[in-house]
Length: 157
Image (cartoon, rainbow, N blue to C red):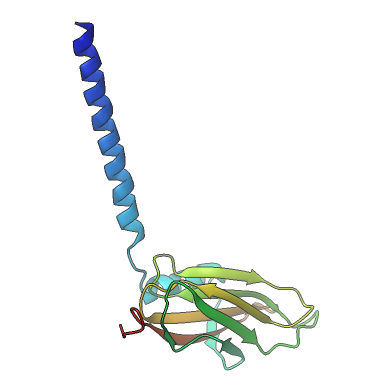
């Protein structure tokens, strides 16, 4: 009789592990869902406290390619034309990728000293827009947007 109980426990444990594995797998599939431009706009609004945004030529992409042959590591630099004085400076630079599972890729926090220039690498799963938002010390938000075409093995996509 104790052998039957052990077999029942094993079956129950296996079923529990199967259920846990299915849950993890389902969460994995849910996280690969792509964001939308609307989700990116919502993330931008949340990151900037709902402030109105203005497209501006003061925010420039540096080194962001128009065509990325490897979406796993896309270089992106952002430069903001700002005096960077105690009265007028860039407080934050946010970078968003409209088609990634999580649209906000990185946030940089700056101080009035130095230049308003940042560089990093981001992952882009497919061709999509990259949006940079510079939050100024007066609360205004300046943005720029650029489409990056992600190729598959350098063959288009």
